[in-house]
Image (tube, rainbow, N blue to C red; front, side):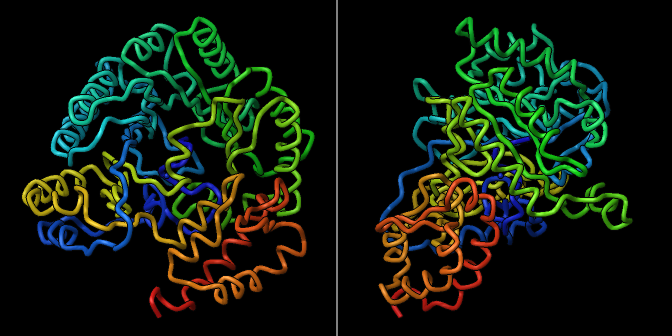
Length: 461
């Protein structure tokens, strides 16, 4: 499960096409069927005016293949069966054909400076063999260069790799792993549609822990899902204790959300899935914040905790409003603030690449460094900024949107009920959500903010 792309884990309006389409890197909204005309439309899109943004120094690469689709998942993935593998097993031909398309997109991408972060997400990228992962890193290195000390993350699922395979990934250049554990309870893993079990997870965390102790792995992260059907405080307490015992430098804890088209949505509609209430969900988040804080983890974003020096640099690109390159089926790029969603199926992605090849001269003008591009829309910067521990500089964002003190005061008045309850903290020019109560109710605050924003005058009026 990616730290951000391709989906918004908090049920927010997407800021990623699918981690986006209205929102961050891997957008969930389906783009138009790609045609040469559509590519030309993209090339003709007007640039936002304002201070020039630096070119992206981060890249997200989507590997859509997985063994099976989990019951909560609405990502653009291609299930190939439990025995599928990129090294010559079942599904190897499909993986190889997709990688050809991916290499083609990377090779013809706009130029830019060396990359400081790369994130290979999915799907299950660890279905690729180490040589295939290494080839993707080399392709990015040829196109952009990899900066010294770059953070190179690979998503991995327990039971999708062994110790020798992990060693191969590290030798290929991977220096950070994001492990999709989700739960330390076998019955929960089965109820989520996961392929691995507790024994697989403990074995995988042991390999990662020892690789880091030997200095072969710079950092690693563990994913968990909270607010599952039937989950209570004591069960979640046990999950947290089990996670802490594995000593991951980073933890991503995602709130379960029911996405359209998933098995969980169908079960919910049939009355077969009973979700916990919001009060209990908030209590679970508060428990996470308290226990992980005691264990030395800083809560730097709604879903992310890290020990000192181990916050995900790639994650922070998304939440800071900076641009990134995106490659692959279903991925969304945002160079210079322009959302550019890729289609969510292999066939449409291949057609999109053909259309893009025909329009490359024109696209270079938009995917290169447009003059005066201001990056992420201001309302999106509010939304992603308030998900971070440090919040946003409200005065600077209002000024960037062309809003004056009266409009900012009107917004503060709109959000006054949250401020009165101690959920929204206004500290000089900086606004932030309190931790954990404000962050736990972030959706309510952000809905009010987004409902207010369109009614305000456009910049210059």
